[in-house]
Image 1: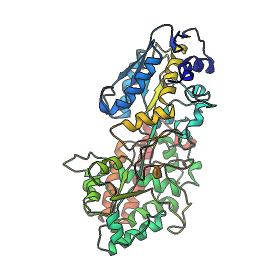
Image 2: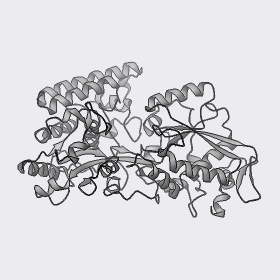
Image 3: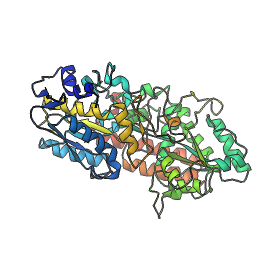
Length: 499
């Protein structure tokens, strides 16, 4: 390890303006706490213990840190629940007794929307505004994060209570042989080009698309893409919480004001566009889901199989498809392109909003919050500095890229500038190149509750399979919006008339 890195723990304590007596420089030049410091940290979900293959990279960089800081021990705790809601409920219970871990698994949604109780997590912005001591020449750690990521970490009050290590993004995966047969020479960049290519595939007697609506992934992704695009110039009218992704309050206000309404032509156009996909959609699409397990033997089945078996030309999947498809010998036989931009060539309501990064985003491996002393009685100011120093080591770009890329899951993209990304064709193309627009999430992602989400999925399925006309869908969707907003407001004791 570089001599500068061995001295970094003391540097970070001083840079954060914290008292330094708990930290000393040992005779070997390594920074170490004078008293033994044990950091309890929760591992990424579904990765097993630190000894599991999924965590091999993380284990390696952890051992390197402990070797350089002999009085610091990292105790990695498995995350035994897959749901962030369940994980946060566990942390709240632990926090009530002051025994929460020091580093807890988080996601930007619960943190920046305010659903994590105030005071449970620390604001780490003061640390991120100082240099990362493991990056020579770095003026402030926050500058290592691209402009597309910082808003996802930032709460409406300006605090940063969550740090994000990697992104998962979605894109359109296509069968190269089927594109060649339909004489499609380039991937579409706009929605109009996308629809033209679907028509070419159909004319070549090929099944163009599988919009997998057997689960919530494809439907909720479409809702995010089209609603965020077409309402981009109206979102300020209901963006009450000023988070990167709309919250239940934002959406309820938007419905109350008639902006998120089938009576608003701009919003209604979202669902007219979805209806245009029906004539190109695979007849059995409701038996498939974009997020189910590859090994699933009962519906919803894995939609990747439709692509690799040549049954459909295009499936809408995620960055995790890339290592999966490569592992089954399909490498080189598929391509991927980002979700097409809706332009004026498709609709007069188009705002040419580039929605790359709207779906997925920095919700991959490496998402943590640092608990407060209220939640974790051991979390003194000096210990916080040690915890942040460990995070600085994990988030040194070379280290971050290494342990993210070692994850067996694959398809997760390290988000810091300079972090190496796996050389998987198409992976980098899915990342946003600049700031991401406000993400408008309405019905299909539990924003207003699970009941509206389930009802919404049923309506989308009936609409796409032709059993529900547009007018029938519009009427029922509007009723769902109105009742869901009223129910959300009642359950959360919110007077929507105030907004």
